[in-house]
Image (cartoon, rainbow, N blue to C red; front, side):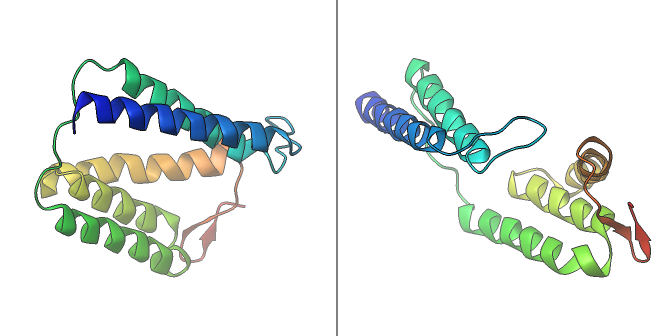
Length: 146
């Protein structure tokens, strides 16, 4: 992709994010403790604007997509479906581990480093949901975080 096309895409995405942020601001945003219906759309729109502006300031053109994208897509989709199937049956620890490992494999890591990342990120995500966000999730079959 040429630098001019990337700049046009960055401007378009920044504009889209700005419009989305303005529309989200029309809804009750709430606060960190009591988020309203406009909170998440406002955050997503803000992230889009920041990402678009960051792409505009980049000095390098984007690298072309690497091969194997269909395989990586299938690995990621398998991780998502596996998470959805395992969360109730095997608990969030195993489901988050599977999803994190699949994401690492889809990102191009080899099997052993992907399993290592899954072993760190999966339980880490569960800790964030259970302790930081106080979300009741099934940790293991028969063991709940409540």
